[in-house]
Image 1: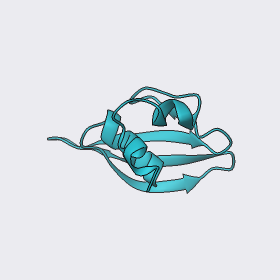
Image 2 (image 1 turned 120 degrees about the horizontal axis):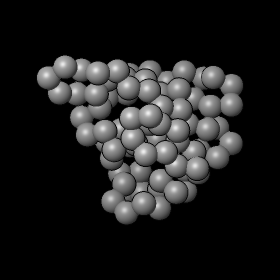
Image 3 (image 1 turned 30 degrees about the vertical axis):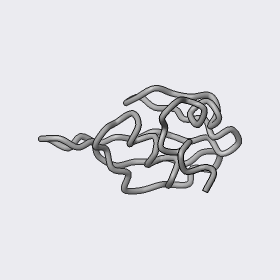
Image 4 (image 1 turned 45 degrees about the horizontal axis):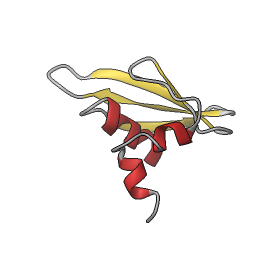
Length: 80
């Protein structure tokens, strides 16, 4: 849930992840974008690489690509 919510916070603003589904080789994160009319959102996180595939924001081939991006909330929490 941490990766999904951090991705949402960084790229989707007021989006809120409500469920994570195990889909075998990846997890499917779903929720709603905030705002006047809440629109559904979904993106997948690869289990082997941690890569994020999204049609509502940028995609990353590996989790390290997302973590090493400056100013991500995940980067600030990984050393805790």
